[in-house]
Image (tube, rainbow, N blue to C red; front, side, top):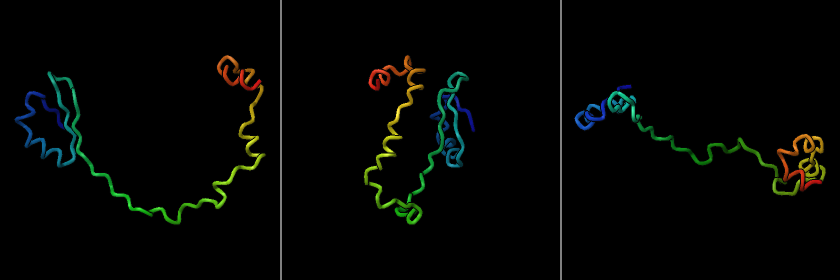
Length: 97
């Protein structure tokens, strides 16, 4: 990492290009205070379509509705929780009782 005064930036562009090509960071300073950081750009790796083929399994009934017993448990409200937290959850308190 190298620190460069903002006033000297234009004069040192060729040097800075070389530094960035090496992968180093550059801090721009104004009167000794850092004002910006220039970091080298890294090209993201290209993702290959189908790279996870065979590693993911989805059930055939994935789009079917859930059974009633699971739905009941999912939407079940704990009355003790609501009584204890009624000041924090006024909308749940009013809508459920």
